[in-house]
Length: 434
Ligand SMILES: Cc1cc2nc3c(=O)[nH]c(=O)nc-3n(C[C@H](O)[C@H](O)[C@H](O)COP(=O)(O)OP(=O)(O)OC[C@H]3O[C@@H](n4cnc5c(N)ncnc54)[C@H](O)[C@@H]3O)c2cc1C
Image (cartoon, rainbow, N blue to C red; front, top):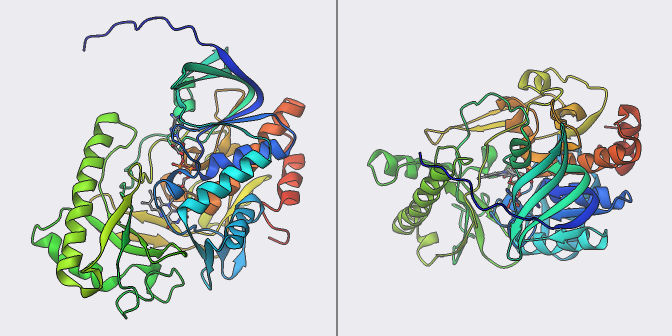
């Protein structure tokens, strides 16, 4: 491959702060608000034009992971977001399972309000492109935007990019590769008749629509279509209400590949878009409920379930979760089962644990770097543990805890597990009595 050194760039340091969070998805938004509410000057940089990542810009609905066996095991900022969405009439907790359906535009607005009210300095449309280190300590993140490159200097960085971009650029050790869960391009349909027996239960994730709210009737039909070669791959389908208006979100496309590889991601997104139109045409052909529907939006990116994860001081495993392993300082309790979408077929395996599992704070700390934490999708977890902790309530709680960890680093230079644990409990990230 030909290579050359690109022009040397002068990068102005436009922001100095205590905590810089890169990535404004559910985990990063919560991390930034948490650090700011803890008195830290905080910058939140996001490559897209709004907050919410996979949740709001990717149309992944509902928020899962709050409840286990009827008990709410996640509180703090994540639950505050739900309450504020409810006040806007833009969220509904689907009891008894407790998944939360929401309107994606209200998610963006509410997250933005919470960030700005907390004093977070928001930098949207800024893509992380590099970093500076002093020895093993990350000192600056370099972001590219319309004004050219800019650097943010911080005492502690939080990587919430989902793909561990900052950790990778800084040279963090990574977990060995495993078979990745597939990506799905989620989309919004309007004009669907959701009042008939075929759909009326399955747009609510209450459990009434069957296991994991998969629409089994449509699944069987799409499976037959796939066997006839009318589509290549699919999963679910899962339909969901957006609470306001009559449109529904749809999660049905599926494509295997490594979404952290530029060329593979392009291929996957092109295939997913073709498949979205193909599947909607198949639904229109077969079911009167879909005959008048049209696609009004699709995720700004493919919804990426899994890419890279750091190797942390500790790695949480599926076995730990099943065994109910306790850690000195858990950052979240996981209520969602280990939910693995097969990369090559329409299958999904779901393993439940008896009581909500724990994630240690040490899984958020890269082994070989200072001044840097990972949160959300990119923490240190094996594939099975990851299949549980990746859901939105859990990553928001991990984000809030990461913000508290960053504040500890700024205030004390090190993290004291008992002090951190007390702060996590005091904020209700793990509700009392849990
Ligand atoms: C198809 C699908 C279905 C799912 N179903 C559910 C479900 O039903 N319920 C549930 O709770 N969860 C579900 N999930 C999981 C959940 O949505 C995600 O795991 C969760 O949103 C991850 O949050 P995050 O903040 O860690 O990452 P993301 O949501 O991926 O956010 C990362 C953010 O970082 C930004 N970013 C990335 N790279 C850079 C960069 N270089 N510079 C600057 N910014 C950057 C991105 O734009 C994004 O905003 C699903 C996921 C998928 C893909």
